[in-house]
Image (cartoon, rainbow over all chains, first blue to last red; front, side, top):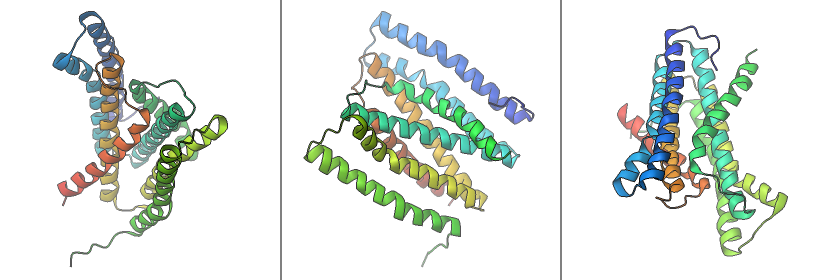
Length: 134
Length: 137
């Protein structure tokens, strides 16, 4: 996303993204294995299901911090517009899919895909937003 | 008398909300309750896609008017409140969706309709705007 990272804040934000992605994968696999092998129930099940959400919250907290400290107004606006694109795309996709499940018996879409869908739309929004300023 | 004067961008945001989003929500409500629940309409094929797209139109319109507001608003503080609220809303929505998805996937929780993600986002966004305004009052 930021191929030409320059400011230390941008570098920290990009590093957080990569670290979060690196952490979330073993947590998701670990949670899946824990449920499969130990047939968790009750509090333990809730605790294990919460684990994959922690990197999600961390990366979004870092996003908020980055937006607060970034001095370059242009970079900040671009990122805000990308997040808006990601939010709009995610909400529109989940709503359309949810109603298609009801109306047209579309296959059930797991809620775990909402997070990847959000970042997919953020990534798609980035070239569209930057193209506007060329 | 504690009446605050807003910026022109805020007035435009409120006008757009009142004249675009509210009618779309009413239309969605009428379609949802009167059409699908009362008359049990079951659109199929292309009509189903059109109905589903119509149901998501308030969200798309809402995101568009937020983008317009952020582009027009000169007050950085007001802009930052909206951006912070949006970040809270999307953060909580993604975390709750992932948590519920994990619980559902491993047969520990009820099946949650994916269309409910939008309601969660809007509820958290309203709470976050209120909390942020209270924080900086």
